[in-house]
Amino acid sequence: MRIARFVHSGGIAWGVVEGAAGAGPDPDFDSLVLAAIKDHPMGPIEFTGERFAIGDVRLLAPILPSKVLAVGRNYAAHAAELGNDVPERPLIFLKPSTSVIGTGDVIRLPADSERVEHEAELALIVGRVAKDVPPEKALDVVFGYTCANDVTARDQQRADVQFTRAKGYDSFCPIGPWIETSFDPSAVRVRALVNGAVRQDGNTSNMIFDIPTLISFMSKVMTLVPGDVILTGTPEGVGPIVNGDTVTVSIDGIGDLVNEVRSVTEVRTG
Ligand code: MG
Image 1 (cartoon, helix red, strand yellow):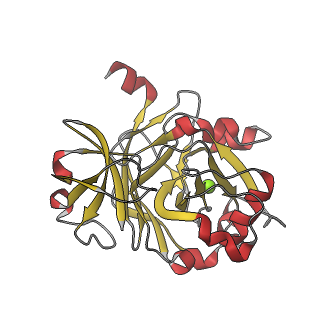
Image 2 (image 1 turned 135 degrees about the vertical axis):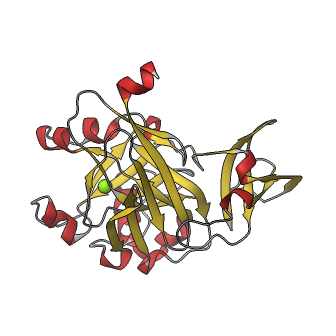
C-alpha cells in the first residue's frame, strides 16, 4: 500500500495511492488517484470517500517526523570516494525535523556553502515505539519505506567536526513521494538523477550495516517513536547540485522523489 500526504481544497489529508506506479517516471503520474483516509495512516485505515487525482493536489512530505536519524559511510564504495575508511560500527547522526520537505518542494542552497551535494538514500518510517530492539525483531517496527535525499553541504561537512551544520539546513531532507508499506528493502536499486542524467546507481544489497542492524543499533541509543525517519546511507556517485538543477531520487518499487534546486538568495528575491 502506498500512502501519500497532500493538500487539497479542503485541507491536508493522507490518502492511499491507487494505480500501479512502477520504477522510474510514471507517464500517468498525474492521473493516479488518492483515496483520502480519516485520521492517521498508522491507525486502522478508514476511507472518507473523497478521491483526488494527484495532478489536482500538492503532495507533501508523507510524514512529519519528530527526528530524522541517518548513517554515514554505509556503502564501502561511497566511503572510498570521500577518502574515508569503512566504520567499525554505524556512524549515526541526526538531521532536524525542519530539514524535511516533500516531492515538488525546493531545495534551497545556503549562501555560505560553495558545494552542496545530493545523496540518494532509501529511508524507512518507524511505526511503533522502539527501544533496545534486537536485530531479529527490528523489521517489526518499520511502518514503510520512502525515497530520501540526504542533501549535504560538503565543504561544511569537511570543515566541521560533526555534521549538524552541513546536513541540517531547512530543505536538506526531501522525502517522498509516498510511503510504500509492502516492500522488501534488502536488494533494491537506488538512483540519483540530476537533470535526467544518472549520477548514482547503487543497490541496497551493498550496505555495510543492513536495516535490522541499523534499527537495533539506533534503538540502543535513543527511543524510536512512530513517524521517525531513518536514512540508510548513500551509495557512490555523490556530486554537486546547483541553482536551476532538478534532482530525482528513484527507488525501484517505490517511485520518484523530485526536487528543484534554487539558491536561497534567488528564493528570497524571486
Ligand atoms: Mg547520507
